[in-house]
Image (cartoon, rainbow, N blue to C red; front, side):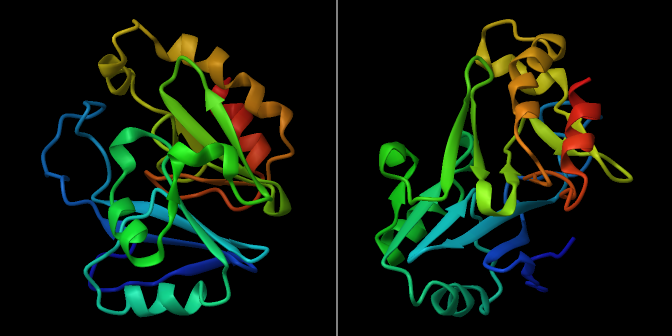
Length: 206
């Protein structure tokens, strides 16, 4: 993973970019699987669609190359959207709104063509499906697993919902995702899965 001093956006497919940036609230020493147990760097996505630019869970690094890069990438776009999968991931949304007049997740009914919302009802999250790339963009419920593949979030990450949701019940809420022809799973925490996404997702959900 990159840090804020080595901004290295990766073009996963034509017009589909991912980068990582240091999370400002990360602290070392968190107990394993506690609410504060995540990697110091988190992932962000930019997808360029037909005359539209869509950011998901975008976090701007301090690297001065970032904003000139985004300016260049979205130069031909007529509209911009700054979407979040979960409230905790608003990150740099305000800066994108100010700089590009981006619409936000509150305007999901007017999303650019080519990106769809998947409401994980009961799990407190919205995932995004980019059909042209067969890419599923997730927030806190599906994570990159150590050594590759995917895993579900720790049960402690569900406690704030106040619904008593368990990881076992979460599996049922996520099961409909397996109906999608997933190739790629772009996660916020951990490494993404860039091929064989459906199999990795099936293994994680169980």
